[in-house]
Length: 317
Ligand SMILES: C[S@@+](CC[C@H](N)C(=O)[O-])C[C@H]1O[C@@H](n2cnc3c(N)ncnc32)[C@H](O)[C@@H]1O
Image 1 (spheres, helix red, strand yellow):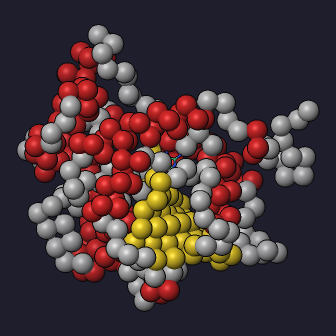
Image 2 (spheres, protein in one colour; image 1 turned 30 degrees about the horizontal axis):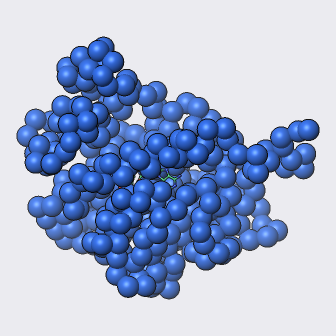
């Protein structure tokens, strides 16, 4: 018996990935824990710093982060709108889904910028969704639901735009996630994904771009240096991030995992920054080694093809 489809060359999605349920259980437990000590207004991504993007964002929404954040995570969310063929006015009629929305701050921020007809955030962490609904939900316009990226609890063609921010690297089966995104998007709808890649996930992403015929990948931007710049600034002594981290009421286990000044949570491994405490804890095997082989941080945008149309070449920003 083969595990694939002779016509498409793709594997049979019904067979699943071994250990996937355990991975998802562990991921949701970690983020439930993070939700229990996160502060209102916290994003859960490494952020990016791009002066042009920041200028554009500030023009659109002056003082968008006034005193409540360093603005890097908001820039990362703003980047997800780049390359899309929608004006601000167009959003008034669009249904938007964010998969892997964390505590919902990013989607809430985007709705302040573009105000879609309906925005839905989905996350596997019960704790994150509970907080998002308690603090940010707004009637039918902005709702948050618990669910799995690989099994979206939505009808076919329900959304015009699906965004995904620093989340897909957690999914055991990215192929299944892509098929789900294609299913819930209207033909002609858009998929905007931004994430960190290691050599394996990068190769797999390229393969899926070729193999999954439902998408035309037409825009990409490598934001590796912009993300590294944000992480460096967060790691600098006295930074907004470090001060906020020091004020958090975190359990000791979270401080051990997070390292000195929250280095791990801020993505310090990505810039090769390891604080002395982390090294000692790693050697003593109290804290696992987190140093990944991340090679790039990239934004990709695809259009959901209508039946019978063919993909064009992707443009680089
Ligand atoms: C690094 S956080 C990013 C959160 C948010 N996008 C942000 O930028 O603030 C990754 C998120 O992906 C979620 N996640 C991981 N695996 C998931 C899955 N299989 N389905 C849905 N969400 C998932 C986690 O619970 C977590 O909230």
